[in-house]
Every structure is written in structure tokens, then in C-alpha cells.
Image (cartoon, rainbow over all chains, first blue to last red; front, side, top):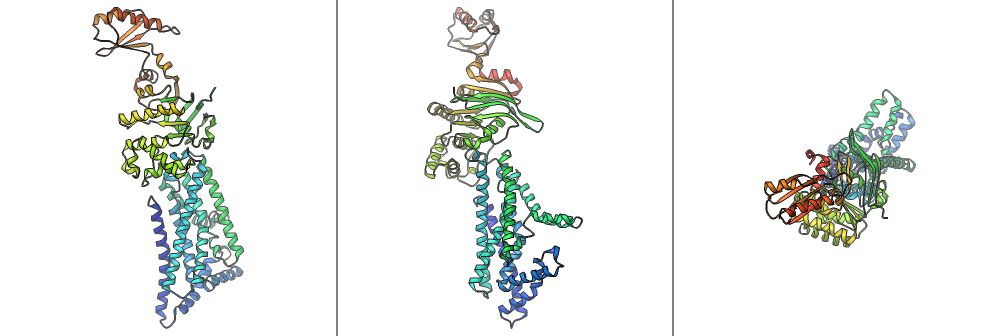
Length: 282
Length: 315
């Protein structure tokens, strides 16, 4: 925050979240204008019916999209998000979830790299151990992310409550709180990945380039290579991309598996990052 | 007998094909002020960086206060360093930065703040304590680094080029502080410097590094005594005839004029033989000329010895 980068990140995250909320609500308003006789709840129901097949397509496991059972499960999941939960908030969280990993890379790429490059850490190295520096900064970064996500959740929810007062405050804020926790859960393995890459680089720019390329490039690479070698589709599981939406699944077991996946990846990335940071020349 | 403050044995470090340190072996006695000398690229900063745990050695061992440097965390609070090329955080007041560093040692905030203010006063930066580093000159940044190194109660302090960029008054103050720490708390200080006169004045032991190798290490007095020369200050310039008569004295090799009334007399001493007899003979010859010497120094300066082992081009 003091260096200004944290403040930029906070503002950028809030802008990103509020823009997503704004455009989702804009879509609702436009549909509302086309049917002036309907009230907001009817408009939302109408949009929900139209959007459900698309949401189900987003949620279905692409490898088994042709299996009827999988499609039925995706439909049920979409129904849960659109009908049983505040649909606008669900839509915003799903959209945010696709952009959030890249936002994380812009927030956490410089955990260590520029201070390694400028040798700022040298003043600390004889006063504390390397593990404390590594985990201390990591916890600070996770704290920043928690703060940003809480502010984002509050901002988006308040914006919806003001612009489209169709949901009760209770269900809206409960779902917002759940979504914020889920977003934080997804952030942790990406922050851990950034910590590993940042601990291996001496330049902040290099670290930013690599983190963005890895977070955006791994699913792309896995998809392309899987067209030749189906085995390569396992590469998707190097990052939380294939299971992060499961955090919004109605079945607690699926949510728990997604949390476990995030946890395992976090442990692996942190082990690699810590190993690099404690053994490298600083 | 005390374990040395630093025990360095066969230390090696390479950067690619270049050997920055090659089989470096010497010890730094506890409570000493130790000078580390060497031309640019000799490996001094690399050695400091390994001693502080910034870099890992490729071979050999380095123990500080009996602790292998691989376990550098055990030296927390016992050793501090003024690194040559480290930087402080921008946009954070220097008081806050030093308090943060002191608190990493385990000190509480109030004590840390009190110590930091005292350290900043010591180096003349107390009035700038609320400023960020952007408001400090190069010399002030150096003093800030020194204040940081003196925080706490270290047993060993490593100072990499501590007085470069400082004005004479501040440089003198730093030297006095190092002496005071040695006297009052028996703190071991290792100093690297290009200022050979400063090292000779301040240090009781030195090591000279050249291209990653130790050329010589030991007490300053022993090293400079190897120079086999006397320097004589006289009350009037010597005539050419008087210089010739002195040169003909047994054991005198050459006489070099170092100033209007200062002469350096290089002696020829057989290996292993004491220089005392020859020195006495030379002094008698000076007195025989009817000249009362104002001052006489035996042995070479550290600078001359340094140049003789590293070569004049490296100075």
C-alpha cells in the first residue's frame, strides 16, 4: 500500500468487479426496457430462463458434455445458481471467477522479485530467517487479497441492492459472503504460484510476464495439446481452472473436493517457492 | 583459546567461469578490528555476502562465532552487516524502516524506537528521521546503512566500504565508533575498504585478497614490518653529499626522498635476520651527520605492502 502498487491493485480490483456488476445489471435493464409492463422480478425470471442453457454449458464438464447424465447435472447446477440463489450475484461471481486468476497475478507477481533484484532483503536476512520472510510476505499478501475481496463483495452487493432491489438483504448478503470466501479460496493457490515464480525471479517485470503467461497459458496450452494427445488434458489440473467453479456447486462434497484441490495446489506451489527462496542467492 | 569470530577454510565461489573466491583461508580473531583489502574484483564483497548468508559458497567452510554459515539463522542478532549494494525501501520514513529491522531481532517497539533514534543521532541523521530515502544524499544513505549495522548488540559487525562517500568528519566519527565498540563491548568488526591509510590506522589485523586468493593475512604490525625500511623526518633537507654518505652505510639499499625533509631508507636484510642492527646502524649514520631526526618509522606502510603483493596496476 505504501509503495502505491497495492493501492493501484485495490482500485483495479474494485473497478473490475464493479464493471462486471454494472454490465450484468445493464443487460437486465435493457431487457426490462423491452418489456415495460413486467416488474423487475419477472424480468429476472425471464433472463434466467434464457441464460440457463448457457450457464449449464459453462458449468458442464467438457469431456463428458455429450453424456446425458452430465448434462442433467449441469442443468440442475444452473437451476441452483439462477433460481435458488440471487441470480445476478451468481452471474457476477461466475464472470469474476474467469478473470480473477489474472487479477491475482497482477496483485501478487511482485511478492519477492523486485526486492531480490534491488537487494532490499539483505537488511533483513541477518535479523530474521528466510522462511519468516517468505511466509510473512505471503500472509501479508493473502491479507491484502482478503481485504480487497471483502471490499469488492460489499461494493458489488451494495450496488446490486441499490440498483435492483428485488432480492432480500439476507439472501443477497449471505450469498455474497459465500461468494467472497469462495473467491478467496480460489485466490490462495494462484497467490502461492505467484510466490513460487516471484521467488525465482530477480526482476518484477519478468515475474509479472511469467505469472500472467502461466496462469493464462496453461489452460490454453493444455487444450491445444489435448487435440493431439488426450492425456495432455490432465495439464488443466496444474492450476485450479477446471475445478474452481465447483466452489459454487450445490453439493457440499463437490465444494469440499474443490477446496481440497486448491489446498493441494497451494501446498505444492508453496513447497517449491519456499525451497527456491531459502536456497537461492539473495 | 577463543574460537575465532570468523573461521574461513578453503572457501570457494564461482560466478560462471570466473572464480570470485579460490581456496580462501584465514581467521578473524575475536574482538579484533579486521581489515579486508583488495583491488576491485578481488572478492571482498563476495566474501562478505557469503559471511552474511546472502550467497552460498561452492566449497569450503565459513564459521561465524562457531556457527556454520549454513545455519545463519542461529546468528540472528549476533551479527550485523552494512552491505555495499543493498537499498532501503522507498516511500517509508527511515525511522520506521530501522524500527522494523530492529523489531525483527525481537525488540519491542518502544525500545527499538529509542535505539534507532540514538543510532541516527550517532551518524547525524536524527533530524531526517521522518524522511524517506529519496531525500537523502549518497553519503547520508551510507550513514543510514551504518546506523542500521550498529543497531542491537551485535558481536560481529561486517562493514563493506563504510567510509566511502563520507566526508572526513563523518568518516572519523565512524572509525571512533568502531574503536569504542571494540573497547567497550569487544565487538569484532570486519571492514573492507580501499582507504589503506584508514585500515592501517584502524585495524589490528588484515587480509589482502587479490583475484579471489588470499595474498597475506595477519596482524598489521607483522605485515608492515616485513617492509625492511625506515622513514626519517629531519629538521633540514639533506645535501646530495649527505645522502651519498648515508647510502654508503652498510645495509642501506636505496634512499628515496618523500618530501622536503622526509627520507625513506630501504634496507637490505638477510632472510631471517633481525633488522634491528641495521636500523641502529642507519640511525647512527644519521646522527653522525649532525642531524637529529624528528621522527622515525620502521617498516613499510600498508599501502606499499599492498602494492607490492597486488601489483601497482591494481591500486
